[in-house]
Length: 177
Image 1 (cartoon, rainbow, N blue to C red):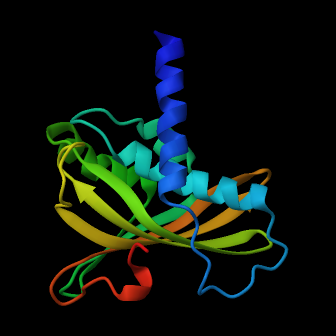
Image 2 (image 1 turned 180 degrees about the vertical axis):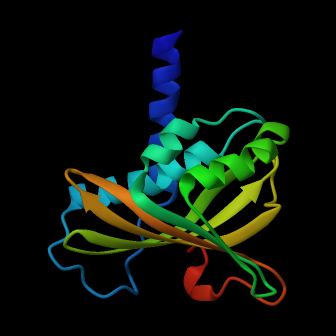
């Protein structure tokens, strides 16, 4: 049973990594970027999506908090200009009832990584679905991840999210290619 679960997890991560291959065609050249580093950065971002995605009630909040730097912030913006800022722990407290009540499946559809030394910026366009097998996304938006290297790990320092709406359609530069 554990071997099957481990195999399915490996296949899911591999498929997700293949589906959201890093797009750097319009990005400036990376300075001292190593493929291993970019993989770790992308894997950290995917891990955030993986924790937030799943059937109702199934979230690993300890894992979620471990993905963030000690003084990290999660910022949500709205079309009316409202901004909410929370620590990862506050996010967990506020959002656990919603995630316990309803399924939510988010996945990146376009990812752009820019890295310099111990900092990285990831633009990640996402789609959200209410069921894993739902054809059309129920929501879309763009997440902006700022990561820092702490020791040998990449941690999310800030996550800023802007959902798509009529006033803020996803521009072509952020669309899946």
